[in-house]
Length: 197
Ligand SMILES: CC(C)(COP(=O)(O)OP(=O)(O)OC[C@H]1O[C@@H](n2cnc3c(N)ncnc32)[C@H](O)[C@@H]1OP(=O)(O)O)[C@@H](O)C(=O)NCCC(=O)NCCS
Image 1 (cartoon, helix red, strand yellow):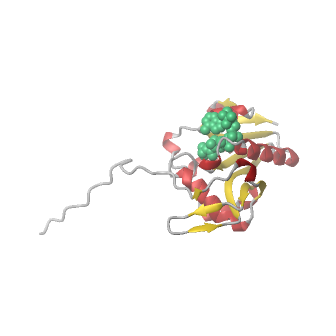
Image 2 (tube, rainbow, N blue to C red):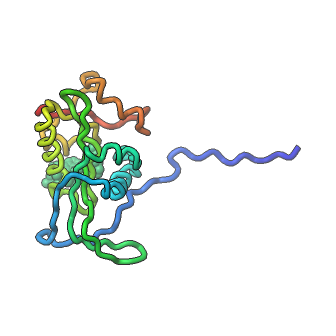
Image 3 (cartoon, rainbow, N blue to C red):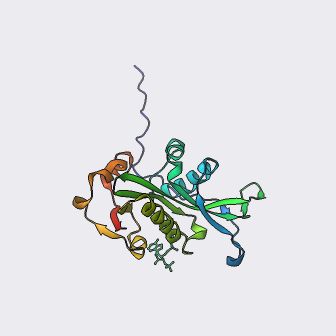
């Protein structure tokens, strides 16, 4: 009988993943027209691009179109109007580029989670992350939510916004729902943080 060599087993973590983002020709700060608004159906593809760009480096949970369509009403976006976007093959003008997103997901009568907070690398440290969290905080207050929660690798960022780290034992069981979908389930490195409103 002919012996067929089996293919080699894939090496664990052999392939390094890299963040992939559209190249943006950054405008002068004064010429930027950044608008924060609720997301619409037309924004799904760009939001996925932003979130999955960071998910490729294990900074965030990857998301698919079904999740986005089902939860689009949770999402808030920041857009820069009239940004020239360069692709590999062409240079073109777009009127509307999503440069940041975040979502507020109600978990129970008194608690909501901040998920999928992502700021395009060229727009970080401009206060956008803080502004989106403030926006979602306002939404949560209007809904009657008493506590905000997030799982994150960016503890210091959330600390600047008043969030406090909470031990796993103290977290309500409702917050673990998403963990079952997470590739880091068995080796979670994120911390739970809460903010009382
Ligand atoms: C973390 C993140 C949301 C911050 O957004 P941002 O718009 O850059 O933050 P802001 O400009 O509002 O920052 C306010 C302050 O928070 C702190 N901060 C911001 N990013 C930080 C980071 N990566 N690590 C630690 N502290 C940070 C700083 O004190 C900052 O003030 P400074 O810019 O004057 O130093 C953004 O860097 C990001 O999208 N990262 C990649 C995706 C990610 O990790 N998302 C979080 C998932 S929960």
